[in-house]
Image (tube, each protein chain N blue to C red):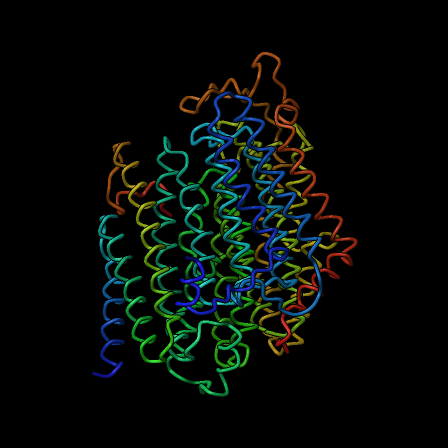
Length: 99
Length: 522
């Protein structure tokens, strides 16, 4: 199997994630799609790391995982705070600031 | 025992860490931890005095350490090639420290601090500044990503830090989603650059592109495009700016001030480093693309600002347009272009902070919030706030005798000298359009009838009694005296704007030293 397969898969996952962020309306699903985008980057990093034969990409991927976890924590925190305020959990309803 | 381990593992060489070069960053991050602990102690005095004083002390110490290690010249790697201190990193980081001090002063009496806790607020702010310093000195793709996230994540929380206000939470969530899309796009671009060149080091990438790797390698081109997109989200460059007005309006105003000046400076510092240092050999490919983004920002930003009534939204749209002007300096890629970008970032700070400080002062006493109507008759009722706003608006429009004029003049000079004369024309046309909305603010302040407002009973806002001491003895002048630190920030920034408009030479000298950091520039 050549690297092209891995890159194609990672690009595919990235597009699924990007498409999901644009079309889905539930912030939880959007956070999930953001994870997909970041993990597509991780897959690309790991396959390139094997291709070029050094470990920089693997270290990078580890760090990306940590950062992704931090982002999700903040995102979930905000969603919980909104839920407690009885705000609509739907980005289309979150239209107070539209325009 | 240790000897046995040593003989098994063989010699170990720790990476060289230049503690002196890292000292400003350590001061900021140490301050971030210190204020967090200080904020835990009970008592109003700790919250209102000790925490801000500690935070400002950390930032002033960082400025002092920066002056101490300032040395014109090329790259000085400090942590095994991952981070460097050069004049670009140091010069831009001074802007972050100054913006941080201004933000802490502006939020002294703010409701944000009471709602989310003084220690947490200052700690997040300092953490974000630490990320910016890391980003400005990044020499490695991994450092770029970590710096960007360390900058962004505390800002997401700060935007949503007024947990009892819907606007604030929504702004936080919106900024988190859009910012994370930007980070993920940037990450994918960086991964492709790594794949094309086999290294995460900016200098190795810079050498490889054009020699080992062809200039039009599809991996490099896609990687550059995705990285530019990701950074454009952070710098609010059109067409990736759509979050800017909403988030600027929803976030607490001191946080908006910080985002407007510091985040923008950090994003442009890394744009300069990535494009004008790492990828300068590929300039023929990314130059026209970034130039198109610059023109789009100038047009969309100025057009969007015209109809706005909210001051925060107006300043957000004007920020999009100004990002287009600064991007023009990045596009030309010459030493002059880098100098003028750095100069413009430096003068952009006082112009914007002065405007936001006046908006903050009015929002606290006027029931009209950040609407332009809150500024009506300000010229007669409190000229100490009206003059800074007037100067800020004239400077943003690029009026002579203000720093904005000098900045635009040099930007146009750099674009013409760098072979992008049409970009200079776009800047001139954009400035002319921008007069429409900047002058409208001035007209509202000086030409509408003065209307003495009785401070509102402030229906939903927390503890109105703290803001205006006594309703009976209230006069328009009192709103300056009741919040002297806000008036001080506004007047100091306006004074700096005028000073650097008349005597720009000291700042230009510094900008030249900042430009000397990037040796590969044309």
